[in-house]
Length: 410
Image 1 (cartoon, rainbow, N blue to C red):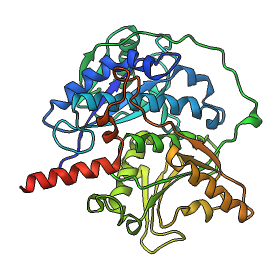
Image 2 (cartoon, rainbow, N blue to C red; image 1 turned 180 degrees about the vertical axis):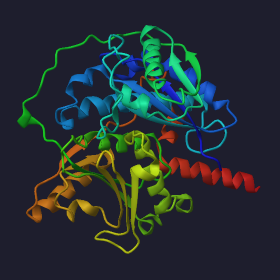
Image 3 (cartoon, rainbow, N blue to C red; image 1 turned 90 degrees about the horizontal axis):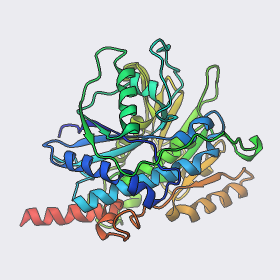
């Protein structure tokens, strides 16, 4: 099966108060029009959603832990809205069949329509810049090729498209992709606020972060969890020699044999490939070729926990370490250097168990960070929808695949 065609959705800045109702008012028309256009295509689509964040603009040089809660909450709200809209419209988000949509959200360091990019500005890129928060020049000058570019009608949306196009066209070949303007929602332009810096001792920068899960049939909940983990990773700077490690513990195949619809669980290698593919799409922004930028090292013989595959991004000095986990703890209790753990509401108790084990070993406890639960409540007609849950549940996806197989076999 051919890879999905890439498309881009340029959203305007979010409302100052990012809750389900305000995000729906701001983005529902734009996302709805985009989904309707993509679900009618004879191909599948990998949709990168570029979400400007003026409120984060002045905070990016401090510890990423200081902006974690605000950023992940915004991501969760937009992922929830996107899933709810796809559920209502019957858009496929779990396969690569024609009309299916694989949405991935990238945060943009952007002050708003008042931000200018001089024509004579230096186009030299900072080699250490990596997502999931990216500045517009880096995004434009290391662009991917697009099938469709969706731009939102209105001053903010069209200013962002103009700035992006102008920056991208400074290099050759010129920007490619058919531009389609979609309707905007309620415009709520953010006012620039004076930066309020927290006490430096209040937040800790993290260079080695970890997350764990099954990551079967990668859905929006997984995407939020992985993006939040990448978000917490402290950026490197020129002259820095500190390695940055993003560790993903992926449940081994043997532990999943008793899962519901186990015959439809993807293999560890397939799940690892999906995790790395997603992380590269939101992390890696460079003019170098993939061969020069990315190094992959496989450990076929079991390491401390199980097999592992390391993917190093040379320019940004980030290594994605996918490790097979064969127990509830994985590298959290075999690697003392890890400092932060990202959990969901479902795995919160596991985080406490990890720290109990580390304390027993005389190690420092991990700082735990939680992601919001994706929720359709209030985002679509003020109530939850049963089909929304199927978009963010691996078990529901496997069940549907089993039912489809039985139906096709009759």
